Length: 124
Image (cartoon, rainbow, N blue to C red):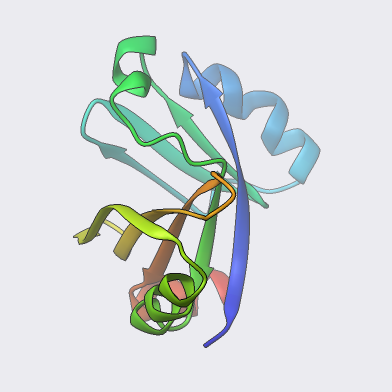
C-alpha cells in the first residue's frame, strides 16, 4: 500500500473564478474536472477545488484533505487498526473507489483509489 498523491481542498462558490489564478500559480491546466452531484470538482497541481453553493457543500462530508492510495482495502484495514471509523462508503465515483474516514483524533479524510487509467494519466 502506498500514498500516491495528496490534495489540499479549496472550497469555492464558482469554479471558473477559482481556477483562473490557480492555473497561473500552478503553471498548468486541470488534471481533471467533473460534476459530482450538486458540486463541481477540479484537480490542479496539489489542489482539489470543490465549487458549489454553500448548501451543496454542507451536504458533503467535511474532509480536510483527499489522499490517493494504491490499495483502498488495505488502507481501510490499517485505519481500523488505529481506531478510525468509516463515515461514508466505500463506494465508487467518477475517479474510482473511495471512502471517508474519521481518524481517532477527529480529523476526517477522503481516501481514493483511482481507476488505472486515471492513475496512469496523472501520475505517469
